[in-house]
Figure (cartoon, rainbow, N blue to C red):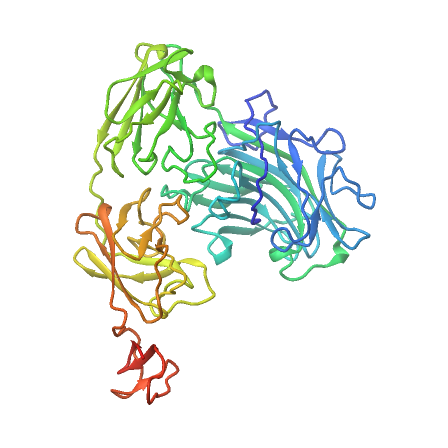
Length: 601
């Protein structure tokens, strides 16, 4: 819902406690956190925090957010009344609009929730200009180094008062977001949403996000398991409740002050998670791997610049008897420039349940191998050896053998080279509008679109395309990527991708995802310049295999582009507006014999 660049605290993952059961949660889930808003007249400060923001802070919204503890003209922005949280929106005597925005937190350990079933029972406000929301943002993000939409956003429920009772859910990521109209979204008419309470919920796991209204599916989105571009939703997220006034969406048709004061009412918020088994005393049962999001993952590590917490990056191992295994794919879910993880006997960060190299409840040693070792200095952390002979796509199978009991566990690793990646029938260039185009880029329009495809010319396993600088390639804004199919899907990256690609170009580099450039995006190297009229021939050579693709470029710089025909007489020189020129007085692009050429004075 909101572009948000501030570092905001978030709720902690609580230990499972004795909560009353509720019928709304799907089978297998257990309540781990809730607020029924039944006690006192203000929010529980151990569970929630207020935002204190000026008007226009995000989305050009008109309201000023103030803590509910402050009294403004005798009113509070939030209050508890009749068993519900009331988020008030009103106009003050100073002419300003006031409302409330809160996010869930608990105590000093603020990490959010990763996966689960989360629901709230809400009565929406009335009035043209209202914009209530129940949504989530990732916790632990340093907004100075990781901006939106890379971080991801989950909107469980939104409504704007100018379209009453029309509730929606949306997901935002690099691959789909509202700035270029590609967000994943769904909407429905919810009868009486502004007159009575309705239940808005999300069920979220590693494979799918599904949102509901009163138990009926609203949005259903499946993880493509290709990384953070389309699925940044594998970090902990925290809950946000707010009522905005106006703004880019809430005020798209204007606002009506006669609707004020108005309020959003929340009967309860509940968080459920699935309970996971622990390892038994004899080594049978379950085992888990935990590590940094930037280092390891279930099916893709997260190239976050700031999020390192282990406690919710829980990777279940496959169990057969008392042996527990997991397959890592180098540069897919195990970084080849480092590894740092540990075995645990429970799905939580608990020293008494972790396998250590020396003292502790459980011990682990590792058989000699050229790839991984147990770091005794960090007492059980498993790391990649310096100079380990691994390449992107290779498989490392880690086994934790507890046959002799978990206090005598033995870890081992097997290695398998990457299998050849299946060939593709073609390669497409996709990039930002304003950067590239088949017949011309569009200056000023920088939205990245999966429909903005350029098919490369194929000659065996070599693919080529010619850009005319100043016509089909913006010399000051180079931003595109290679794909093995039109639209999002099979992609060429330097790591964490279907096909691997490296650059041998003098002018273009391939982004690594954590060095200031997006993973796999082609960019103009520092110090290199392009000028209008230059001809850049781009070649992707896949003769060594699609997982060993190489990008090269060449330039002719003053040659005919031969791309854009024009109706003119042979031998005549025309400017780009189609008017004949008797003599070239300055260097530039002209039309000669129906072709665009660069002519130097």
